[in-house]
Amino acid sequence: MSSNATQYSKIVLAYSGGLDTSVILRWLIEKYDCEVVAFCADLGQGDELDTVRDRALATGASDVFVDDLREEFVRDYVFPVLRANAVYEAGYLLGTAIARPLIAKRQIEIARETGAPAVSHGATGKGNDQVRFELTYYALEPTIAVVAPWREWDLSARSTLIDYAEKHAIPVPVTREKPYSTDRNLLHISFEGGVLEDPWHEPHADMFLLTTAPEEAPGTPEYVEITYEAGNPVAVDGTRLTPAALLAHLNTLGGRHGIGRLDLVENRYVGMKSRGVYETPGGTILLAAHQAVESLTLDREVMHIRDELVPRYAEMVYYGYWFAPERTMLQAAIDESQHDVTGTARLKLYKGSVTIVGRKADRSLYDPEVATFEADSTYDQADAHGFIRLSSLRLRMRALVAKRAGKRP
Image (tube, rainbow, N blue to C red; front, side, top):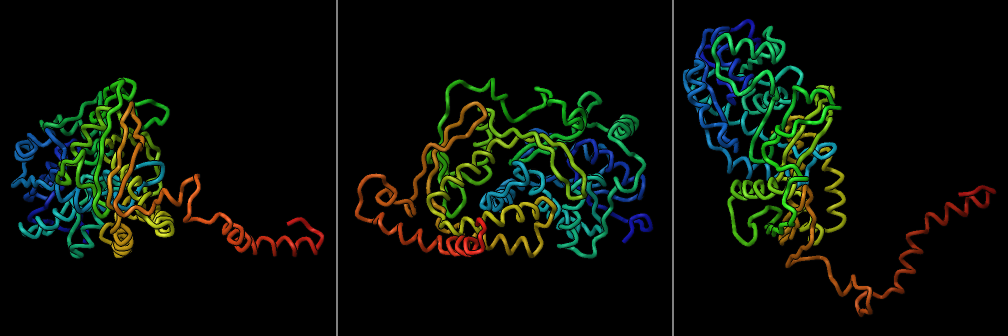
């Protein structure tokens, strides 16, 4: 359905209170002469949400939903990704990508509740988020109408959006001096745009919000123990926490020690390269801890097959296919592998680094009596001769054939 040819009585907007969606809220009202319901998902943005309701109403929203989705976000979206050890390209822990399907799902629910025939988002026509939002919309509500202002209007740059906001007295948390596009939730905060568009330009030190600069972090290491049950973290230093509380606590610990900064030029789904800077302190700690517990409890072949699938899984999440059958299928396989991933990892946090210094598990596949370099009665080293002879059979046959032909193998 073309939004250019149709008028809507009501549109539900995924609203963050930032520059883009603040301008979009007013633009939708003027363009379509309709009610705009603003929906903001609380995924752990902190004090960013303190004034979001008032700002949305002041900008013209007919109604505002600010829903606390923190526990659902971490439990049903972040933890499944971490069970997969999913990392996109050179280290991106999918902080923005994994939030979009949850936001879009709740947006569709609100559209149903309020009788809105259309939804809208603030994603640009150059980015990944437009795909992530709209794939989710259509997967859950195939006849929904989608209004994507960045693909329609003539406000072609963030500088013109700032002009529009100033002209209409729209309060926005962006200035011409710091025109970063940011996305924050319990898993991470991302920064794009402004001086970051030059991949040679080092980020300004005052840009970072979650992490201390590693060189300024404490000079004494801090140790932390994280307990897992069936692939999910459930406790820190022996204290059981809800998923959201656990991740928030590790964000504080990791941030204090400068952990989780990433400066990445990545490949967007639409085909271009993009530079992003990320802070993911708690997620970085959890990735290391999960891998440590898996190292004791996961069968070798299961681990290797899962690891072969992880790049594809990470692509699915990054591209926006969370509600696609192929992601669901892979998730089922990954979760099947996690039944025995129960144990505790001990980590040292120090000046930007996370080091595994211990791991233990009741159902550990590691047996010191087998692995020892000392004498043991379990493993007969003489058996290795036959194992190697059989393993080398195809290599020896190939070499013999080459030798008969007067060639080197």
